[in-house]
Image (cartoon, rainbow, N blue to C red; front, top):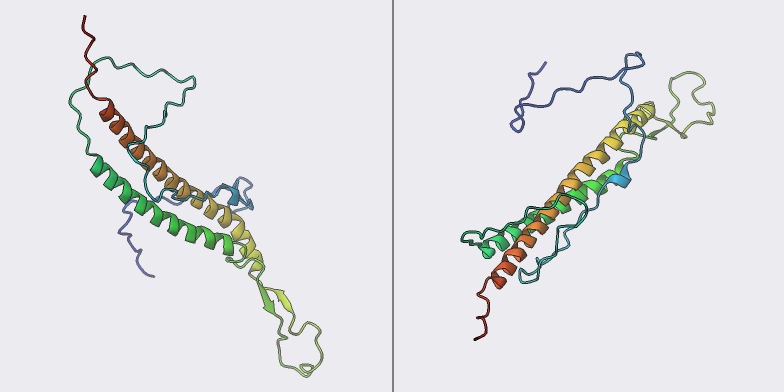
Length: 212
Protein backbone atom coordinates (compact mmCIF):
# COMPACT_ATOMS: atom_id res chain seq x y z
CA UNK A 1 0.00 0.00 0.00
CA UNK A 2 1.38 3.38 -1.01
CA UNK A 3 1.85 6.22 1.42
CA UNK A 4 -0.60 9.18 1.28
CA UNK A 5 0.42 11.91 -1.14
CA UNK A 6 0.73 15.29 0.53
CA UNK A 7 -0.67 18.17 -1.49
CA UNK A 8 1.62 21.13 -1.94
CA UNK A 9 -1.45 23.33 -2.51
CA UNK A 10 -3.41 22.55 0.64
CA UNK A 11 -1.64 21.75 3.89
CA UNK A 12 -4.91 21.52 5.81
CA UNK A 13 -7.41 19.66 3.60
CA UNK A 14 -11.01 19.55 4.70
CA UNK A 15 -12.08 16.47 6.67
CA UNK A 16 -14.27 13.89 5.03
CA UNK A 17 -17.94 14.81 5.42
CA UNK A 18 -19.85 12.76 7.95
CA UNK A 19 -22.15 10.19 6.42
CA UNK A 20 -25.86 10.84 6.95
CA UNK A 21 -27.75 7.58 7.43
CA UNK A 22 -31.09 8.43 8.99
CA UNK A 23 -32.82 5.31 7.70
CA UNK A 24 -30.14 3.09 9.24
CA UNK A 25 -29.55 0.97 6.15
CA UNK A 26 -25.76 1.38 6.35
CA UNK A 27 -25.59 3.48 3.19
CA UNK A 28 -25.38 7.24 2.86
CA UNK A 29 -28.75 8.92 2.36
CA UNK A 30 -29.27 10.86 -0.89
CA UNK A 31 -28.53 14.57 -0.72
CA UNK A 32 -31.24 17.18 -1.07
CA UNK A 33 -30.07 17.81 -4.65
CA UNK A 34 -30.18 14.13 -5.63
CA UNK A 35 -31.49 13.75 -9.17
CA UNK A 36 -32.18 17.46 -9.64
CA UNK A 37 -31.28 19.38 -12.78
CA UNK A 38 -29.60 22.52 -11.47
CA UNK A 39 -28.35 23.75 -14.84
CA UNK A 40 -30.69 26.75 -14.55
CA UNK A 41 -28.51 27.97 -11.66
CA UNK A 42 -25.29 27.91 -13.67
CA UNK A 43 -24.36 31.51 -14.64
CA UNK A 44 -23.14 32.53 -18.07
CA UNK A 45 -20.68 35.37 -17.34
CA UNK A 46 -19.06 37.52 -19.99
CA UNK A 47 -16.72 40.50 -20.13
CA UNK A 48 -18.72 43.24 -21.84
CA UNK A 49 -16.02 45.92 -21.87
CA UNK A 50 -13.54 45.85 -24.72
CA UNK A 51 -12.37 49.29 -23.58
CA UNK A 52 -13.19 50.58 -20.07
CA UNK A 53 -15.47 53.64 -19.98
CA UNK A 54 -13.68 56.95 -19.78
CA UNK A 55 -12.97 58.50 -16.40
CA UNK A 56 -14.26 61.78 -17.88
CA UNK A 57 -17.82 60.44 -17.88
CA UNK A 58 -19.83 61.67 -14.91
CA UNK A 59 -20.24 58.77 -12.45
CA UNK A 60 -23.64 57.20 -11.84
CA UNK A 61 -25.28 57.50 -8.45
CA UNK A 62 -24.74 54.13 -6.75
CA UNK A 63 -26.50 55.06 -3.52
CA UNK A 64 -29.56 53.12 -4.66
CA UNK A 65 -31.94 55.11 -2.47
CA UNK A 66 -34.20 52.80 -0.51
CA UNK A 67 -34.95 52.76 3.18
CA UNK A 68 -31.47 51.92 4.42
CA UNK A 69 -29.60 53.94 7.04
CA UNK A 70 -28.61 57.42 6.00
CA UNK A 71 -24.91 57.95 5.43
CA UNK A 72 -23.21 60.38 7.77
CA UNK A 73 -22.86 63.82 6.25
CA UNK A 74 -19.24 64.98 6.11
CA UNK A 75 -18.84 68.65 6.89
CA UNK A 76 -15.11 68.85 7.59
CA UNK A 77 -12.84 69.48 4.60
CA UNK A 78 -10.59 66.60 3.61
CA UNK A 79 -6.84 66.81 3.49
CA UNK A 80 -4.76 66.84 0.33
CA UNK A 81 -5.80 64.12 -2.08
CA UNK A 82 -3.70 62.65 -4.87
CA UNK A 83 -4.94 59.89 -7.13
CA UNK A 84 -2.92 58.34 -9.96
CA UNK A 85 -5.64 57.65 -12.51
CA UNK A 86 -3.06 56.27 -14.95
CA UNK A 87 -2.07 53.56 -12.48
CA UNK A 88 -5.73 52.86 -11.74
CA UNK A 89 -6.46 52.44 -15.45
CA UNK A 90 -3.47 50.12 -15.88
CA UNK A 91 -4.65 47.92 -13.01
CA UNK A 92 -8.19 47.91 -14.39
CA UNK A 93 -7.05 46.80 -17.85
CA UNK A 94 -4.92 44.06 -16.31
CA UNK A 95 -7.91 42.76 -14.36
CA UNK A 96 -10.06 42.81 -17.49
CA UNK A 97 -7.47 40.67 -19.27
CA UNK A 98 -7.45 38.17 -16.42
CA UNK A 99 -11.25 38.19 -16.31
CA UNK A 100 -11.46 37.36 -20.01
CA UNK A 101 -9.10 34.42 -19.50
CA UNK A 102 -11.12 33.20 -16.53
CA UNK A 103 -14.38 33.43 -18.51
CA UNK A 104 -12.87 31.48 -21.42
CA UNK A 105 -11.71 28.65 -19.16
CA UNK A 106 -14.98 28.63 -17.26
CA UNK A 107 -16.95 28.41 -20.51
CA UNK A 108 -14.84 25.42 -21.60
CA UNK A 109 -15.72 23.54 -18.43
CA UNK A 110 -19.36 24.64 -18.47
CA UNK A 111 -19.80 23.45 -22.07
CA UNK A 112 -18.07 20.14 -21.31
CA UNK A 113 -20.27 19.45 -18.29
CA UNK A 114 -23.41 20.23 -20.29
CA UNK A 115 -22.28 18.00 -23.16
CA UNK A 116 -21.34 14.86 -21.22
CA UNK A 117 -23.28 14.94 -17.95
CA UNK A 118 -25.94 12.51 -19.23
CA UNK A 119 -23.45 9.79 -20.17
CA UNK A 120 -20.05 10.46 -18.56
CA UNK A 121 -20.66 8.26 -15.52
CA UNK A 122 -21.90 5.32 -17.56
CA UNK A 123 -25.58 6.20 -17.51
CA UNK A 124 -27.46 4.25 -20.15
CA UNK A 125 -24.36 2.30 -21.15
CA UNK A 126 -25.03 -0.59 -23.54
CA UNK A 127 -23.11 -3.69 -24.52
CA UNK A 128 -23.46 -5.95 -27.53
CA UNK A 129 -24.89 -9.31 -26.50
CA UNK A 130 -22.52 -12.18 -27.12
CA UNK A 131 -23.55 -15.73 -26.35
CA UNK A 132 -21.10 -17.32 -23.95
CA UNK A 133 -20.00 -20.89 -23.52
CA UNK A 134 -18.84 -23.53 -25.92
CA UNK A 135 -21.21 -26.45 -26.28
CA UNK A 136 -22.92 -28.54 -28.89
CA UNK A 137 -25.66 -25.93 -29.30
CA UNK A 138 -23.23 -23.09 -30.01
CA UNK A 139 -24.24 -22.96 -33.67
CA UNK A 140 -27.97 -22.73 -32.92
CA UNK A 141 -29.80 -19.50 -33.64
CA UNK A 142 -29.97 -16.99 -30.76
CA UNK A 143 -32.33 -14.04 -31.40
CA UNK A 144 -30.38 -11.86 -28.93
CA UNK A 145 -27.06 -12.32 -30.68
CA UNK A 146 -25.65 -8.90 -31.65
CA UNK A 147 -28.41 -6.97 -29.86
CA UNK A 148 -27.70 -4.13 -27.42
CA UNK A 149 -28.15 -4.97 -23.76
CA UNK A 150 -27.73 -2.89 -20.60
CA UNK A 151 -24.20 -2.71 -19.26
CA UNK A 152 -24.09 -4.18 -15.74
CA UNK A 153 -22.67 -0.89 -14.40
CA UNK A 154 -25.30 1.35 -16.02
CA UNK A 155 -27.54 1.35 -12.96
CA UNK A 156 -24.61 2.25 -10.70
CA UNK A 157 -23.74 5.06 -13.10
CA UNK A 158 -27.26 6.43 -12.86
CA UNK A 159 -27.10 6.39 -9.06
CA UNK A 160 -23.71 8.12 -9.02
CA UNK A 161 -24.78 10.70 -11.61
CA UNK A 162 -27.85 11.61 -9.56
CA UNK A 163 -25.47 12.90 -6.86
CA UNK A 164 -22.55 14.09 -8.98
CA UNK A 165 -24.36 16.10 -11.67
CA UNK A 166 -26.03 18.56 -9.28
CA UNK A 167 -22.76 18.77 -7.33
CA UNK A 168 -20.92 19.76 -10.54
CA UNK A 169 -23.57 22.33 -11.37
CA UNK A 170 -23.30 23.82 -7.89
CA UNK A 171 -19.51 24.00 -8.34
CA UNK A 172 -20.04 25.86 -11.62
CA UNK A 173 -22.43 28.18 -9.80
CA UNK A 174 -19.72 29.00 -7.24
CA UNK A 175 -17.03 29.61 -9.87
CA UNK A 176 -19.32 31.60 -12.16
CA UNK A 177 -20.55 33.73 -9.27
CA UNK A 178 -16.94 34.46 -8.27
CA UNK A 179 -16.18 35.65 -11.80
CA UNK A 180 -19.26 37.85 -11.70
CA UNK A 181 -18.06 39.35 -8.40
CA UNK A 182 -14.72 40.10 -10.06
CA UNK A 183 -16.61 41.94 -12.79
CA UNK A 184 -18.49 43.96 -10.18
CA UNK A 185 -15.20 44.86 -8.52
CA UNK A 186 -13.72 46.06 -11.83
CA UNK A 187 -16.84 48.15 -12.45
CA UNK A 188 -16.45 49.73 -9.01
CA UNK A 189 -12.81 50.53 -9.77
CA UNK A 190 -13.90 52.29 -12.93
CA UNK A 191 -16.60 54.13 -11.00
CA UNK A 192 -13.99 55.24 -8.44
CA UNK A 193 -11.88 56.69 -11.23
CA UNK A 194 -14.87 58.62 -12.54
CA UNK A 195 -15.63 59.92 -9.04
CA UNK A 196 -12.07 61.15 -8.53
CA UNK A 197 -12.01 62.71 -11.99
CA UNK A 198 -15.31 64.50 -11.34
CA UNK A 199 -13.99 65.75 -8.00
CA UNK A 200 -10.92 67.10 -9.79
CA UNK A 201 -13.04 68.88 -12.40
CA UNK A 202 -15.10 70.52 -9.66
CA UNK A 203 -12.13 71.44 -7.45
CA UNK A 204 -11.70 75.04 -8.52
CA UNK A 205 -12.10 78.41 -6.90
CA UNK A 206 -15.58 79.91 -7.24
CA UNK A 207 -16.08 83.05 -9.24
CA UNK A 208 -15.26 86.22 -7.30
CA UNK A 209 -18.21 88.01 -5.77
CA UNK A 210 -19.60 90.96 -7.74
CA UNK A 211 -18.28 94.37 -6.85
CA UNK A 212 -20.44 96.44 -4.53
